[in-house]
Length: 124
DNA sequence: CTTCTCACA
DNA sequence: TGTGAGTA
Image 1 (tube, rainbow, N blue to C red):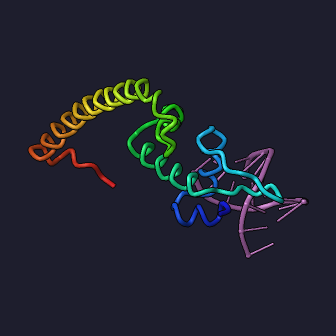
Image 2 (image 1 turned 180 degrees about the horizontal axis):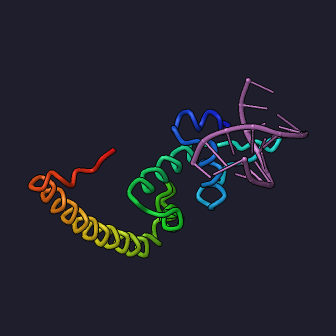
Image 3 (image 1 turned 90 degrees about the horizontal axis):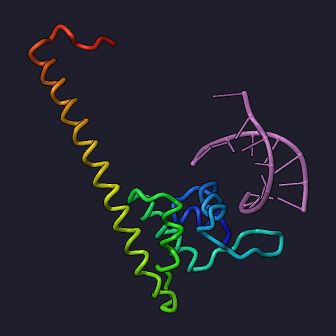
C-alpha cells in the first residue's frame, strides 16, 4: 500500500512515516513514479516503532532494537545485546521518574501552602 | 487526486 | 512536526 493508506490505518502522519524512513527505521519499496510501497512487514514494523516511542525510547534506540524484533527467526541472536540496551533505557526511565516525583512533591507542598495562605492566589 | 522533495512566519 | 509550494 502507499503512504496515504498506511497513514490512515496507522494513525501516523505521512510526515512522521517519512521521517522514520529518514532515520533508517523503515525501508519501504519504491515503485513506478518513485512512490513508497509498504508491505505487511512494514505495517507491523511501524506499529512497533509507535509502541516503543510511546514507551519513551528515542528513535536512535528503537533503531538498534528493530533488527531483533523482526518476524524473521534468523535475526534473533543479537537480542542478547538488545536486552542490555533495554535495561539501560529502563534505568533511565526510573531516573526520570525519581526526578519527576521530587518535582511533584515540591509542587504539592507549594499548593498546600496556598490553601493556608489564600492571599497568594494566582490572578488571571 | 495522490505522492515526492524541500523549506520555513 | 505541521504545512505549503511546485512536480511528476
